[in-house]
Length: 253
Image 1 (cartoon, helix red, strand yellow):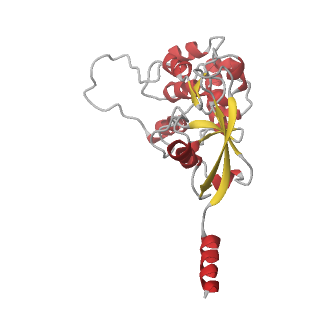
Image 2 (tube, rainbow, N blue to C red):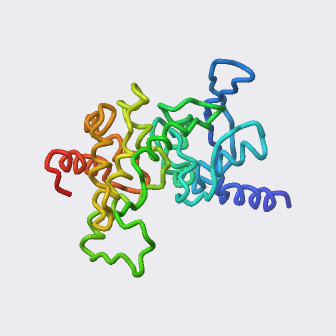
Image 3 (cartoon, rainbow, N blue to C red):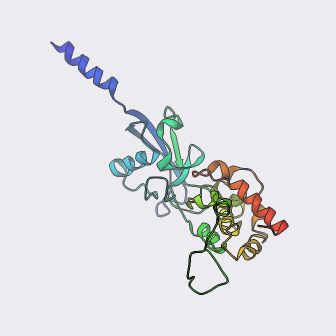
């Protein structure tokens, strides 16, 4: 009578969607040590779940001190950008089955920004560069408009790609120039400048171009395409940077 029971248990085990995965997380706590270390966590998890789900399991069930950012968990807020298996990705958009779960999954903070704790970096330099390019509509008319600022579908399409930026910093922190010189504006700031430089309703394109014409501006780009590869929204970042360079030379935009 024991055989059917064993068969049932074996069948249930075979049908289980869970696999054992090793998460190798780079840990850093300045209150404990000035050095970062790697720590392994063994998880039973469905491979169709996301890396973010794995990090949640670690924090909620294993080690509550693990620190990372996340908000919407749907690839919109951009707060959970991190290096996963050596590439910049959003943890909430990266499925475990897509990154070879048979080997340890390495998770570490994005590069080029100061690590505050574990996977959390200081984003202030990144956001300062974003603010410096004046990422908002500027018009000469300071009065409240009495009607909509109309724009053709063609004019809107001109900058459509660069409206997709979610400020995750995946592109900027994948840039070798930014790693070596934190003064460089970086791809994300240039993308957000592009969004307004090529907006037919905006009247501050010349000002933004002059800002990016600085020694730490758009000319620092070496066209390695790391930024384009890293963008989780599929923005053609390198193309946008090239268009800003062209606008600086021709003053046509």
